[in-house]
Image (tube, rainbow, N blue to C red; front, side):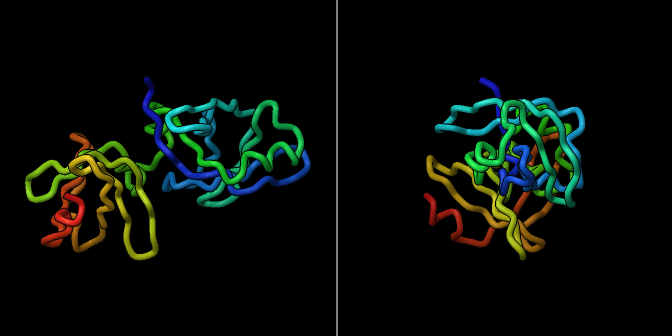
Length: 171
């Protein structure tokens, strides 16, 4: 099975011809040039491909996309506000290396112990929360200047020092 990474959501339809506004967390302004397909999760772990006709940059975090077969505003509206996913290879091409979303798939290490793989990155104004599976349960780990030690891109690891007792909540 392919691996997919969530990059954002289809926030709104725009125009009369079925264009959609993709709000993304890729960490850089992008037209997604060269990207052929996005995926929308219809059911848990069931990703439906949508092929891209055209794209254009709207802002640092928004790209307007036109999908094949979506030709009117009413049909486009049915796709909002659905989450958008990319296949792993496409994600690596389009995500900025320095953006928080770049931590997806990295192993999180706390005081030398591997505690889980980053499943989701939730950006908030003062910190980033990383969702991992810790001892069979979802754990939300805050990543900010006090807790982040380093990010090892080569070995796909995020080193953190978490407050005492934080992981006990999830154990």
